[in-house]
Length: 353
Image 1 (cartoon, rainbow, N blue to C red):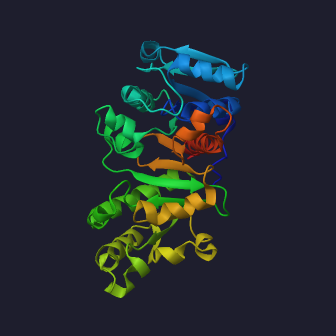
Image 2: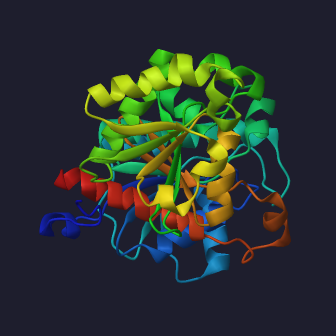
Image 3: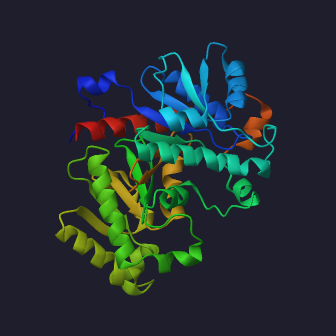
């Protein structure tokens, strides 16, 4: 199995260029973004996207040695990224619309947060960035700003005109590394069963298989799939989705050369004897698979969006407004480090494939 960390000498000489959106300004996103970008500056060329003056103030409080260099949006659009030195962190200035009080949400800044995503998406599609990493944002603030918003995953798909994406969370805190993908994302539980169709589940498995190969360097990914119902439907007594939809999808995927198996009861699948034989678990809905992963890795897991025309990773936690209100130095930037490192590994795996 190819090592996703492996890279040619040329790859090692050129640091992956990652756009880092700093998320909700009243939360811990700006702090963890700055800390991780500075810590990884010799391995990754991070480009922070946020209010340059606000980020500079935070950076100075974290460590006066941190050097942020601001770049206007217009300069970036006209000329792309200049060649910043290793001891400099670039910031594409995306000014906020209201003063920030740590821990206090302000809907006036909701649209500015979305603009940071638009800049990162545009730059990734144009090839200015090798990938993007997102700090947590507050969905309610964006909705309160008058923009219908359900989450990063759906927004990135819409803006990149991607018909279907797959949400996957991962951690290297387990042996082997645990990856959990989702057949559905941010849906009310009452809507999940209707969303699992033969076509949508088939596309999910195809995307998962393709990206595990191309972005993780796995020659033949092994995917284990949960059922939807308790006990995987108990032979139809607890639901027929496994018989009518999931099993036929898996048989069709196998016929296309995909190493997939199931459906397994979700309550017993997450055992070491099964995980040792899996490169990824595909769960049917958000709270079926993610509690297990977050229990194993909270604060050090990451979120990955598969199926996009660019690499995107994110932290596995929220805005932590309470920590932000308490002041700098209380937030753990481990998940941001993991998200940035994983994005860089995916870049290198793609270069070598």
